Length: 497
Image (tube, rainbow, N blue to C red; front, side):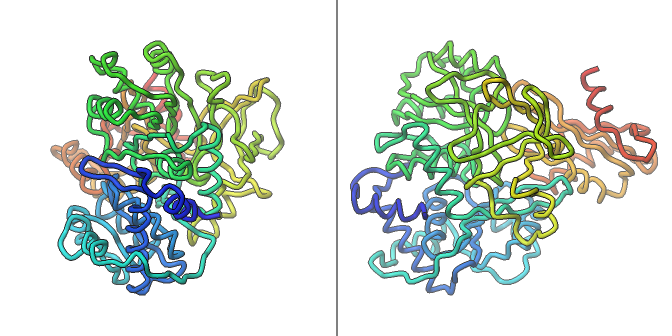
């Protein structure tokens, strides 16, 4: 099944129902469908064929939604990309996916001018003359599109533990099943009003906000990005928002707003994912609003939702809940044997939400799957009632404000600096962000002046802001095993010790 077919059905059956709104406008389902059709036709005129990739490098805006669904309509594969990346990071992702078209704005294009991109992609610019708005203004929504439907729908890039980002290929069925099952579990319908402030280039916001709301025939209200707790809360009040998704940091900021109790909110569901939800925030939200945050768990490779606490049942603080409908999980030891209750092991997932595989990464795919099960790399346990808990991350991922930060990628950047001999990147706890990034470095010599400032500037040039280490510590040597492997566990112990 295809989510775009659901949207087209809504355009016929509830044409005047509001589908999406933003600070300066809104679309009904018919208007949104017409705009998608115009862009889809332009894709076809521009030579886009089934299976071609189209990169969408935008903040939350109606153009993102139109582009995302237009890709579905013509059988192209959307490649949503974080607009805050550096030229180096853009180059890695774009040269791997090789998009035929890049949809972005002037600020990002200026950054892309410093990026070596193979091929000659066509640019469609948002908020610029002779571009996106002109395509929609001059387009013909009545024209028919004849295209070959393909299995693949989107490529979501997620960095691997070996450094370079890899693209998780999500199929139409992956996205449809995850949105449908999620929406039905939360009783979403045409009356739903969802606030989308989490970034749409993440599959979490796509499924938990956009796609599930469109599946239900509800209304999505867009904020370009997180600006402040007061902006988010006032928008919730003005738009009478009923459904909200965000990482724990957003809830932390909102609960610390001095005027939190003065807002007249209509929220019925608050969902959290992307990082562990602190018990303090869980309890404070319940005490403030009279209902509990629903915590869930997922990965880009699983479209993304795997588990969540029962919306109407018992929610256990610290637990990621129970598997979603039709999704199977098991916890295994190193011999791939299932462990007993309350024993920890690696969490494996199987179901219609699991990606087709990584884009052009045959070797990575062999490592990612075992006997048809996807290996999450997360260490988990299950209690006697079936509730799951994430104990540790097998992959040394740092989760900062809901964003995954992969130490190996940052380390690779440091190793390209001429002063750096060795480096280890770890995360450390932070009350607001969840985790922050620390780099511990040994230098090739002691003759470098202003090295902290130099390395900081070097990181800001080559890494997105959320990946830049907050602390750069210079040491004489790093703890190692007898075989020479750096002992990050010792470095983490020093943080707490």
